[in-house]
Structures are given as C-alpha cells and as structure tokens.
Length: 172
Image (tube, rainbow, N blue to C red; front, side, top):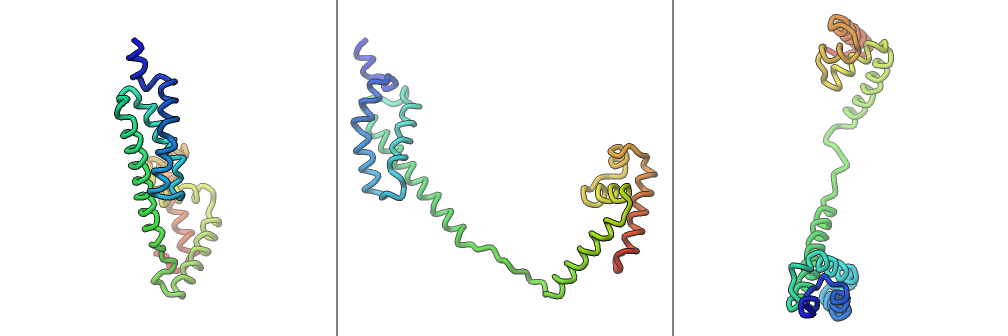
C-alpha cells in the first residue's frame, strides 16, 4: 500500500515534492532558452497545473519529461501566436477611399437631406418605412408588429415614399 501512495502523483505530498524538485530547473530551462519576455514563471505554473489535472495519467518516472515537454510546447505556441499577431499588425488598414472629394461631400449632403426628410415623416410613416426598408420586414410582418391592417401599412409606406421623393430631389 505504501508503494501505491508513493507512486500516486495526485497525492499532495508527492506533488509538492515534485514541485520543489523540478520547478527551479524548469524555470531556468525556459529562461535560458527563451528569455524573460515569455514569462517563465507563468509557464512553470501552467505546466504544473496541467500535471495536476492529468496526475492519474502520468507515471512518476515520466514526470520530468512531461513537465518540460508541456512547458516547452506552451512556450512555442505562445511564440507562434505572437508572430501571427505581429504579422497582422503590419497590415495597416487603408484609411482612404477611391471616391473623389466631391462624391464624399455629396454623400454627406445627401445623408443630411435624408435624415431631415425622415424626421419630417409622421411617426407611423417613419416606423413602417424603416421596418420595411432598413430591417427588411414584409408588409404582413409590419402589420402584425404594429397591430394594424396590411392596407394601413401599404398606405403608410406609399405616403412615406411620396413625401421622401418630394423632400429629396433626385430620388426615383
């Protein structure tokens, strides 16, 4: 029975002994191989947490190998991730468009006219128009949402479109 307890890594006393025995050498290994920027203390802790989570699967004679492999693989994965992050940081999104300044100015003016025209609609017209054109709802869906008939929805949409055409020149 004492042999079984000594070989069970899940037992706290043995786990603590393993930690005391290998933590410093594992830290030094990671520090010498990768430097301080990968934070070797955290990698040591992660390796021991993983050992604790898989303590039933790791035999006592494979503990050192397991810890060093886990810590090394974790570090390599982090370095690989950092390379991907750096690669995407190099790709600066363009902050310009191919549109002319005149087009951009006209677009801004049009949006102002559009917002003003929307505010001139009645509440019912604006509600029906936005549900139909912005949210893509069908007349039947709008009618059930607002608690009105389909004909009332059609009348509101027709009135909204007529008013918008009048308020914003150049709309078809």
